[in-house]
Image 1 (cartoon, helix red, strand yellow):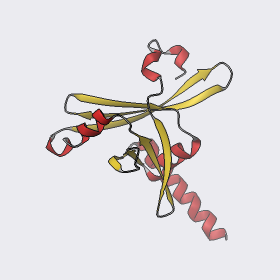
Image 2: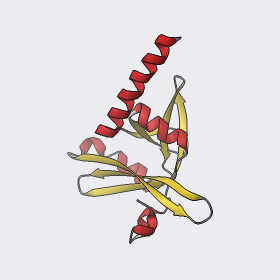
Image 3: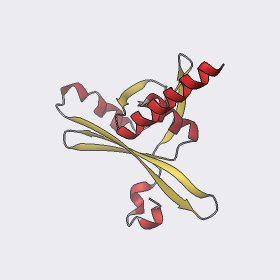
Image 4: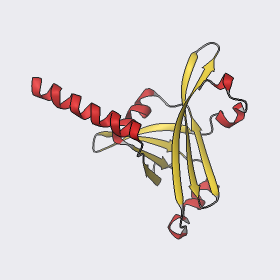
Length: 140
């Protein structure tokens, strides 16, 4: 949904940057967490009973650039919600779709939290990609 149709645009201002790291030559989608307060909250994860996460994409209409793809990643620990809004590069979006994973890392590139993305859309997209890749491999 374009931001000009969303009433509270403050909810979609960029809060974090994205980064692509390579693990065993495989690109992984990362959001860089610079807020030390949030990092310390992650240490309490194992003591919490309910953890939920969601990733939503949106479009932001920019007058000069055009449409920009944004992502809002939310992690809920019991009643507390941490939100990450970013405008990632295409490589980040591709890595999320193909790997069905998203990672939060700190400034030293250490993993804070990782999350499996399990939605029908991603699963369907990855499954279709794998089938297409098999067809291409057979033709070689």
